[in-house]
Length: 236
Image 1 (cartoon, one colour):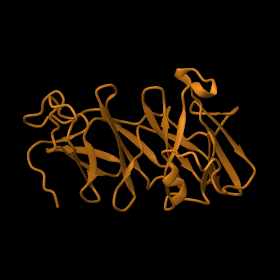
Image 2 (cartoon, one colour):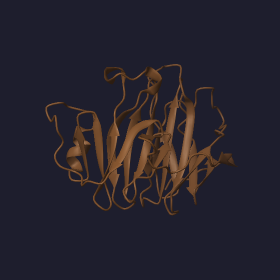
Image 3 (spheres, helix red, strand yellow):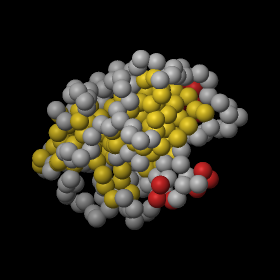
């Protein structure tokens, strides 16, 4: 087990009450074109000759998710289907309305789909409940802890800065808490938290690994985040 010594500080964190699990309304869902239809899902994906980034994921989860051209279909309870339709310049959408939906994973233990949503210059992730189609916007596709009870999602780059979330899946519905302060470990530089990759070392600890493609970035891999009950504590 990884043992941390030195700085121990409770990370400032906040829940945003405006970020809720939502259902499609008037054909829209968090800015995406979306509807829930009273028809079963899912058969084989159509336009199979077109290779999409989520082709492998759709093949893995055949029967619960499929694609029909620009539309991603997700199986919901009671023989219903959530349809998410891509919107980009090729389909007549303006740049600030871009939404490209790609299946990432299906978590049977939580009955949740994970969908990567490409925006004009950035991306987010949707967590979609198989029970009723309610959907939550996450910073990025979350990384589950070994037990699956917790998760972290991280975006870290020069354009977006650092956006780190902790998810608590023991709650119904699951909750997300944003970490609003970064650690200040000895020797940390201004770019010390750019482009790390979160890795669970056990059920309650996350370390950050990886190398930056830019030589001037010096990621600090000594940073350790303790996660428990949906809250985080920095350790260095």
